[in-house]
Image: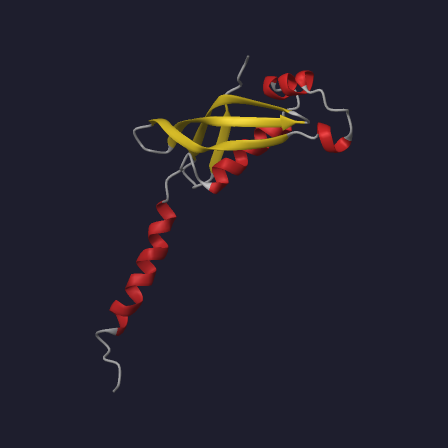
Length: 129
């Protein structure tokens, strides 16, 4: 049975709509990309108070394995506010660091913003003890 020409365009329209719907994707607080960016920002800041607290209170003998900090974001990341155009989100979640035998946790606030060209940027609000 030959394909009818009037059904062929409809068949190809659905996958195209799925692809195009992804082009206007809005930023998310809890996406894998956002989580990765937050962890990278915090772990690259060797002067952050959470790391300093954990290092000062660790009783583990200093060696490369014990003193390398291990960061972990909590399971629950929430959106605390959204801009009217839905391109800027204020987010909040827990982050913890383990250094040797000490684990310290703190609430972390950060911003996720999507530029007009679709690029996502993440900025972490510095925290203090």
